[in-house]
Image (cartoon, rainbow, N blue to C red; front, top):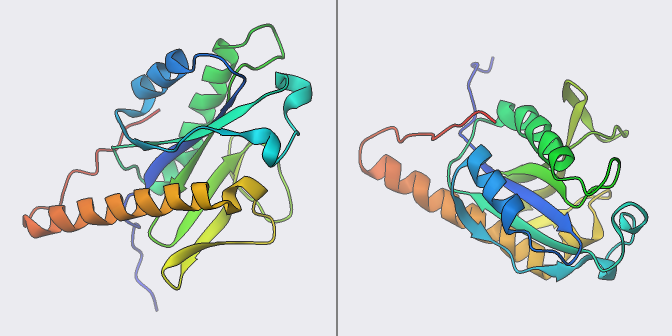
Length: 190
């Protein structure tokens, strides 16, 4: 029989979708919620992968991934999604029109997990209207998509981002173990 164990903390990231606007205010608000940024992806044009959000947010949407330095416990993902949902509403241009779509997720040594407010057959309900899904799995030295993985998450740029933050997290964990300490998980409530 397996023992009850808490998994190690995971790297919190957000997928940030926005029109061609200055995203620095949004990033500063995210830092207030989740702490300092450890790494971010290059910005890319979302139209190459999907136009789903253009009706709501307008054309020429950009996307960027931002990883935070402080790892969190995996069961905090719902809190993070609720916090980013509230932030989206505070930054609205007008009621019902987001300027930013902010989707938090977790990167672990074995998967990338996304949070969402939308249910689907492959998603698991967490609480308070928040669901999650495993969208990438790590095997054979790299992340691999699943049948429902969004097209941009399958792109080399995004896979490189998740590999980089996985490497940073593993390096940090080894350093903490090497010092003989348990390491501060740095958890932060949203």
